[in-house]
Structures are given as structure tokens and as C-alpha cells.
Amino acid sequence: MQIRLDKYLADMGIGTRSEVKQQVRKGQVRVNGAPVKDPGQKVAPGEDLVEYQGEAVVYAQKEYYMLYKPMGCVSAVSDRTHKTVMEYITCSRRKDLFPVGRLDLDTEGLLLITNDGALSHGLLAPGKHVEKTYYARVTGVVGQQEAECFLHGVEIGDETPTRPARLEILSQEEGEGGWVSEILLTLTEGRFHQVKRMFEAVGKRVLYLKRISMGTLKLDETLEPGEYRALTEEEVSQLMGAGQGKGKEKRNGEVYEENWNSYRQP
Ligand code: URA
Image (tube, rainbow, N blue to C red; front, side):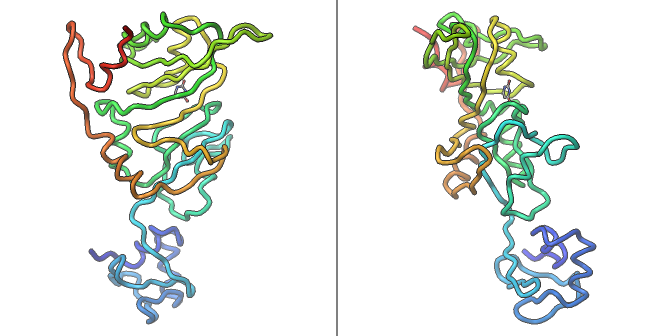
């Protein structure tokens, strides 16, 4: 595959298309050691050596980062008021990176940042039912009643109830402010404020929310809020398999996905 030199440089974040054209015309760019002044010259990523101001510019088609999103920033590419998640990805100059899905301003945890639109679609498309697991601290005593309720789907004010979700109770403790439960909740959809609205629907309030996994990807426990790292090749290829659909089973008139069978309470 060959692409235009100005596209190659712009894709790698050297500047806008018109800025890099100027840089090429000024003689700032060499291809295989020779100065090139034609921005339209074709180059082969991975084969030709492209240098900008004496430094090699390696063409990476797709980039994948796992960010431990901290609270207080928005899951958007730009925002007038708040810091965006993109501002944490300081190692890349690419302009086409974006967050895969959203976490609320006050939610923290795993956020994938990439320029791979197909992967993003595979992970977010409603029909793909990719699992996302959240850790939360919730007011009150959360128990089997809520687990049953979430497993069967709960009305949260949308056209349809939520899809079956698996609730795991980690602890229930009474403190000065009353009872607080720690839970893990696994969803296969991503509606607006879904976790908070599901708990509201059963009379509870989410005090703290953190996403710990998305499909096969788990939040790296060595990351602190605000830190990120590139995904490994293995993580990327596993993730690409994650959105490819799962078998379905019909039981009692309801459809369950294969891997949700074990989520039924005894
Ligand atoms: N559910 C929520 O309520 N908020 C999030 O940020 C993610 C899931």
C-alpha cells in the first residue's frame, strides 16, 4: 500500500494537511535519505524511511491505549469546560484518537482510546452485547433481591427494560452514614448513566463507580488514575474477538446468551 507523503505526515500528527505540505515544500522532509519537495509523492508505510526534521516518523496505522480515567474529566475529544480524557494521552500526536464509549464525569476506571473505528463499533454496537464490569459502592444493603431483579431486567425509564445483568455482592457494612454495599455489576449494554439508574430503580444510590473491564480488556492494576499505557498486541487481538457475537439460548420464552446461563441464581 502506498499513500501520499502529506497524508502520512498528517496522520502521524506532524500537522494539518496544509501545514505538512508547507513543511515538505520547505525541505523539512526526507524519504529514504533524499529530500523530497512534492507533498503528493507516494510512500509505502513500513517500507520507506520518512524523516521530518531529521527524525524518523514511523507510520502506525492504529493505536490503542488503556487509560485509567480519573474523576473530573469528560470522555470526549474536546470540551469547553472540563479537561478531556484525550489530554492524558501525551505520547501520541495523532489527531484521530477518540474514547471508545463514555464514562460519566464522576466515574473512573477503564477507558479505551484508539483511532480504530471498526474496533470501537464492535465493542459498542448494541447488538454485540460486549460485557462491561463495574465496581461500585452503593447506599443500603444490596442483596439477592437486587441480584434477581437485575438478572431479569429492570425498568429505568427507557422504552425497554435493561438486559439481564449480573450482580455480585462483595460486602455489606454499616458505617456512620448508614449501610454501604460494595458490588460488581456486569452489563452487556451501555445506556446513559445505566449503573446509577439501575440502582435508583431499586431505591439505592451509587456513591462511587469504577469500570474495571470491557470485553476481554481488564484495567491494569498498576495504573493510577490519570495514567495510561499502550495495549499489548495480545490484548488488541483478544479485544477484536470480543465483539464478534455470542451464541444464544431460548429458555422459558426468554433469550439468554450462552455465557449468562451461569449467572442465574440457584
Ligand atoms: N453507568 C453509569 O451510571 N455511569 C457510567 O459512567 C458508566 C455506567
